Image 1 (tube, rainbow, N blue to C red):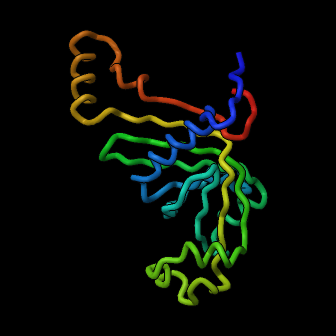
Image 2 (tube, one colour; image 1 turned 30 degrees about the vertical axis):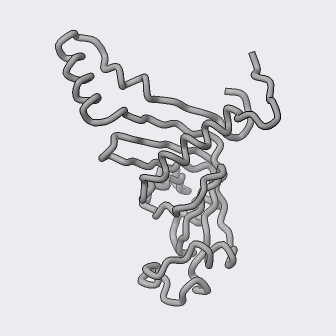
Length: 178
């Protein structure tokens, strides 16, 4: 049954965005996976920008990286992130595109990027990858001690760890039915 949307009340999408925002807050690096022209999946580490997640991710990137060509041919991508210290994992799927948005690049610019882009935010070899996230899936452990207890209990009882399913969720962000 479809939930009625009540003005001012949080929707399932709002709740999902809040959950994703909370998970991304503790994650610094993501693996961006694209499909290459030879039908191979290629992943590379990308710095996660600390910005309010609104359903889109942005990565500063070199215009010469192979991901740009991959995205032009096959825009469906996956981004995976981990906070292994806290046993939190996030997988995001969506549609990527290459942008040359200097205003956004300047807003995202950090001094240390100069090591890769000596021309600063105006460097002609610098651009943006924007990903409009359509699907998100997460795994979030309640903490190390609870995880250890659950794993030990499952070994003794022969059952499955409770945390394996209690802290897992997925959501579509593009409005299509699940």
